[in-house]
Length: 502
Image 1 (tube, helix red, strand yellow):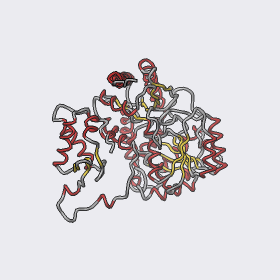
Image 2 (cartoon, one colour):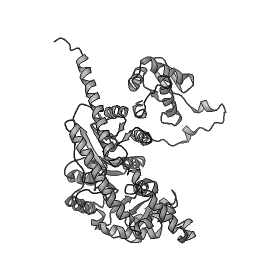
Image 3 (cartoon, rainbow, N blue to C red):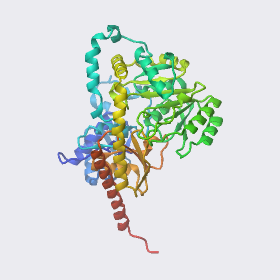
Image 4 (cartoon, rainbow, N blue to C red):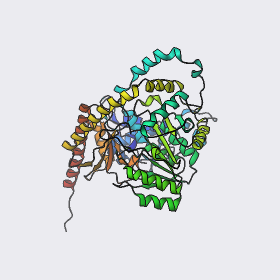
């Protein structure tokens, strides 16, 4: 069992013995189900290396867990997780939850992502990982004033259940807003969602049967990979290249007859790439010929720092096959939990039927306030302000990388979005670098998280949206120190190696 993903944010302190801290961490992962009953834990020597402690400390940690009944140590075999449910009750009628739950195969990076999100709460940590807007610029005061000024005018019935499609005034407002992006849609083509992640899940739920093929343009958003894999889809990857790999796509279409292509054509997560207008037109033509549905995820196109990005795929959709998905989580604040989808009425109606089983409808009050926010002109003002802020932060990160890590990393400066995608030129893996960087108090996302299959482990994503320029520069400085320490350790190890006599 590789438990390194569970300890990426762990720092052993001097407040208590190291072996007790290690035991406590493993115990917590057994209790929350991250470590399943029967799983084999690392050998004492491996555990010692992971935590950078002595082997005696690792042995004592396992003995403490064994004493409390969380693990069993079998001589000559190893250390295994015991059934924790037998620890909490002596009742013969204890509920056997592990036997009742359906099997769940957690993607390799899912636990790491969860750990990183939690670690963002640490005061001394510089988070260059999760792609979120800066909380300091959430327009909370404006929303608070809108709530105060307009609450009495709200029809009390709007606090009750509303149509599953969503709050009708907001649907009208979004339809009008999308005209500026070249997207013309009617009310029956629009649905409000509880974030775009719900749209991903529902689209897969109504289109994908286990064993169906789905095409992903990799690297791509981890949430999409998780959703499609959880539905039992077989993933076909379009590799990263300077030009869109149309010959590979057409081969997939002819050979496998996939139902769906998922892509982020504008400022793609994680590498910031933009699909060229000629490629978009060609993709629409090819998809129409093969009756391929395209799920266009568009969370970042409002944040452009140079030229206005090309028209969306939905704006070019002449065959009714493009499903347009977007969210207000990136441009305003994730806590709103409001996203939306524009697609053919037949698909929208099927999504509506599926959504009623999930939540009946998305949050009324968030939709009402968001509608007011847009109609009063605050959204446009906010986007102009944030584009200026994020552009300065992008420039600060790019300059810091060029000054300190240009010889060790390859990267390009994105023209929009939140991210800089890096490739390591040294003989260092991104996971090793992350472990060292976390000790320095800075985090990022390893590139493996953005692939359906394991990659070379030389890439990683940096996010510049959450911190101001000064903090970003400090974060890159810590990253440089982490890389330097790893490189120094490699040199020391090679010097200590005794070459055989030839």
